[in-house]
Image: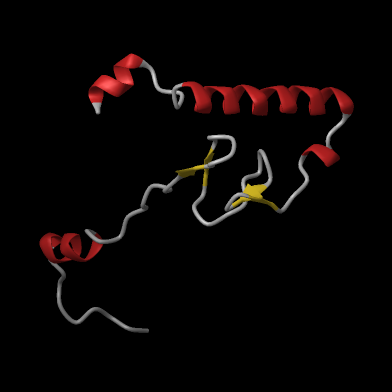
Length: 94
C-alpha cells in the first residue's frame, strides 16, 4: 500500500482544491416562447430549435392541456410584439 512521502500543508492542499468546484448551469432563452432552456437544445415547452419545429409538443397533450398551452404561447407572442416583455423599470436599468 502506498504511503505519502511528505506532509502536504494546508496551503498546498487548498491551492490544488481551489479549482475543483461546480459551475452554475448556463441558460439561454427560447426565441419562440421566451422560456429558459439549455443552449443548443430543443425547447421542451414549445418544441422549436432555431425557428424550426422539431417536436410536436401539442400533439402529445390532451385537449384541455392543449388549449392551455396554445393560450400561453399566444400570450407570450403578444408580449414580445408589444414591448418585448420588459417593464419600465427593466428598461431604465439598461
